[in-house]
Image (tube, rainbow, N blue to C red; front, side, top):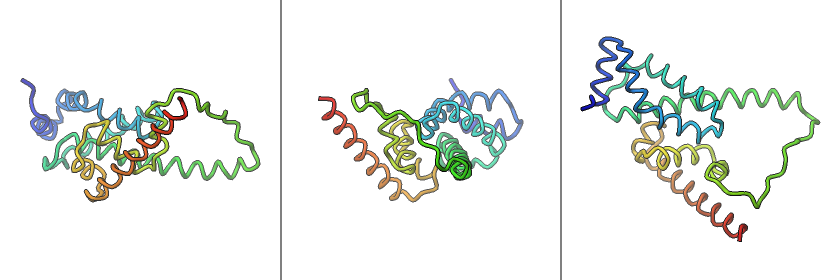
Length: 180
């Protein structure tokens, strides 16, 4: 029988046991990596952020109070790492825009007849909607767990999830009409 997360956390806090923390990472890395990949839409960046998440979790494990699930706590750290990275990227983009004024965008136009996938649908959502839809549907978190992880009020989480789900439904219905 496996030890519950809370016992492993207590072991890590008390003895800095690397095997116990490794087990916690093994249990939750799929959720953390999947969440970050959907939020970032960049696998390499998501893996980097996941690694930063696990490092930060190890450093802060003594602050886990056990009032919520360990999964929510890890996702909260992952969300914070995602936000920090997004702020850095936006700052870098603003600087790059100053240097690229007058340069044409060479991105190829999207083929509307191509296969529609979830990542493209998620890309149409606002950042908060995408984050919360991913947390609740892809990671299997409850609205309460997502609220705890993001620090948003429960009602706000529900609104973002419902709006995001409605936008995704409309996106896929439109894609289906265009494909037929």
